[in-house]
Amino acid sequence: MILALRVVVLAWLVAACATPPTHPVQPPAELPGTWLAQGRLAVTADEEAWHGTFAWHQAPAQVLIEMAGPLGQGSVRLREDHTGALLEVGADQVFHGRDTEALLREQLGWSLPVRGLRYWITGRPDPDRPAIVRRDEAGRVISLEQDGWDVACTRYLDVGAGVLPHRLVLEREALRIRLVIDRWQPGPLAREGS
Image (tube, rainbow, N blue to C red; front, side):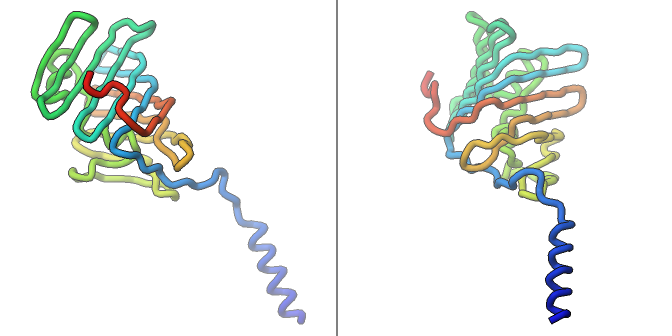
């Protein structure tokens, strides 16, 4: 009887000393093939800086990224599908190219890593490319290195069915891109075909 009581007291003491988790652990959310992410963006390249808002519309065969500076100034619209890439700067400049990354670099002097970012923005590495990935205890990506980019997922957002990145920082050489995703929406591409 005394031995049993000692075991119970010891178990109770061990349990009392355990540190409870500071937040519930949630797995990363699974997004369908079509989704929308909206938020804020800051780009620093060499001595230049740009910030504004973005809307990323992703479909299986198409991506549409809309960016605008403060008060809608400096709007950029980027679309890529099986026919190539289209970049609209403001209301009157339209550029065409084979892919979004080369087109942005040529026209704006910096490039958004669209190929990898379509995965990174959802908290995953590109499954078709080698990567070094660090995860937290829930399996969420904390940081990854892929295609010469260092990507940090510094905060996640509860979207009901799990969590998705809320803050990301991408760095490569003298380029730093910071994304804050304020809204995730699974479903049809809002501007498909436009």
